[in-house]
Length: 446
Image (cartoon, rainbow, N blue to C red; front, side, top):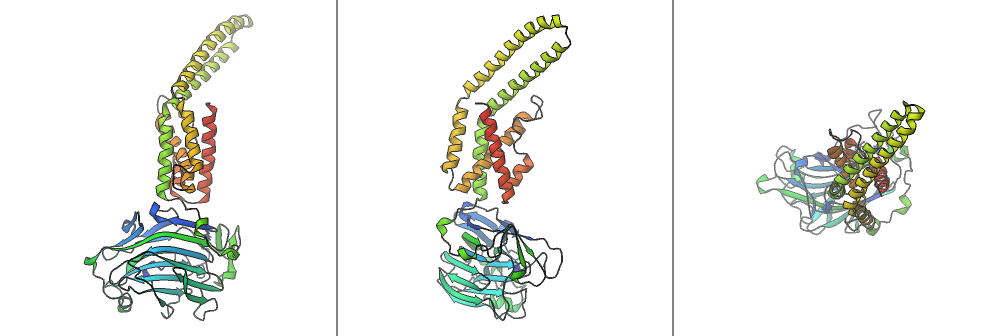
């Protein structure tokens, strides 16, 4: 039923001008034990979503709670494997849903007090004229241990698996309709047994919910998703609602369908907010540690440049004869000042000679993944360097003593926030460009 997770913002079959869907267009592995993922955003009761070493927890403790995460991407046919433990509690429903903007839907649901079964279900174009599409499947108590639940969705069949064993197969020619438009993923829990629900819903959910026995916790450990199509957006070519009408912008519908075998070991974990912050902090600490040398080098170089310009202007206004003496005097003085500046720079560099080694070591750790748990985490450390330099730029240079223009204008605050809070490829490419510029600038000092 998943009534609390079922809605659409713009139905392309009823409204013209709906925006294309952001496509996943690849395969991903999300490990929620590492923290929140920028690929899955809270859309209901965010305060009831918590991240622990067990994974992401959806906590239901009073009426009105329906904690829900939704993917920021869509898939157009694909395979989804989820490792989860259902919530206990009379009337409590744990749900894992694929749903399109046209209300095509593929479901997995667990009833809190049903310790022997879970339910599979589907809907086509929001048709709820009957509720005979659901099927129950025997299983070990889903509230006591983590299990693998899988949905394999193609144009020909939708197959549900429990711990890698097929439990149901829905043919694409189903007389009840067939889900075949781009789907987002919604994960959450809700109280089907809340007294405000219709009697039929309460009965289906196992009876009235007693909130005094809560909180009721639904936990998802990890998630593997493979989009069988490619591209960056999926658009509706017409209002027929068939999969043939869907256009893959920058890719191909079913472009990866022939590679539908999944090997978990081939998946690199997507970065979590935890790894992003870890990378941000390590990069920030690196730059803060040596902020004085950056400030000193910037100041000395600016003074040297200003003195050189002043000398050139003075020389232009003098006579040829005076210029000879002026050149001799000014050049001698300038040479001395430059030597002093060079000496200051050399002394500053001498005092902070370990900066070069720190940079080398930090970059080495990034590319060997020695500091973080995975390659994507290491990538976020590169993002952290950009963030760290930006913070130093703001705090150390934008004041009365130093010029408004920072010597390290690599990533603005707004750009860094985009990198930190967005999972889009564009933001990631921005961070890569920023890192290249940072390392280039650092190399100029050695």
